[in-house]
Length: 161
Image (cartoon, rainbow, N blue to C red):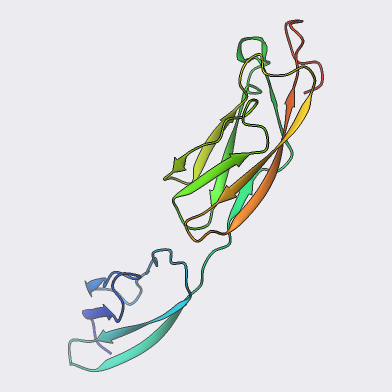
C-alpha cells in the first residue's frame, strides 16, 4: 500500500473516521458505549487498494479510586492536603456518586468528567466515620469506595490522618 491513505469507519458514532493520513500509523480513540461493538476500518491507498481491520470495542467497567482514602472534617483545621480527596472515575460518563451518609459527604449529582473532589461537610461528625461512596456510570455499572472522615473535635487538627 502506498501513502496517502483514506481511512473510514463503519460506525462513526463510535469511531470518527480519521480521513486522509500521510503516514503509516494512525490512532483511533473509540467513544464509550454501553454495549460492545465491532467497528470495521477500511483503509484505501493512493492506488485504490483497500484493506480492512475490525476493532472490538468493549464497555469499560465503572471504577472509583482511590479506595480507603482519608480526609478531615473541618477544612480550616486540616493539615495541608487532607481536607479533600481527588477521586478518579472510570466507566462511561456521565457519572453520579451516592453517599452512604449524605449528611457527612453529600451526593454528587451529575459528573461529566473523570475526576471529582470529595469534601466532608464541616461540623457533620461526632466521631471518625467511614462513608461509602457508590459510583454509577451512564451504563448503570457501579463501583464503591470507602472514605474515612476524621473527626477533629475542635482541637485544631487531625491527629489520626
